Length: 142
Image (cartoon, rainbow, N blue to C red; front, side):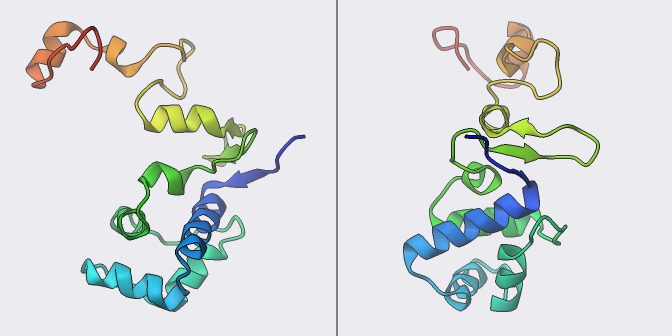
């Protein structure tokens, strides 16, 4: 069965609501947890984010990271749905992308728009470039 394509904003809102509900928190309680990290947040803002319905919402990277931290999940879990077959509309002019490909991209396991999408980021750098970045090779993996 094919899943509906959702925008990034809609996915983030759905995921925040999912993880908030799993913790048994109200929107007000979630906002208070985020505020404890020093990130301004209100229950009205939480409601606006959760009800994005595909519309653009003004969510900063700091807010996204704060939500992930207090909900006890990786930011990846807020940016992508966990359901199989889900597709995301990351950008208005690009066709929807499989959510698993987006998760792998976020994890640094592949590139998003390269014809050689099987190639990992680590293969894009020479050993000398990795060493210059302070990374060591561990059994061929970074």
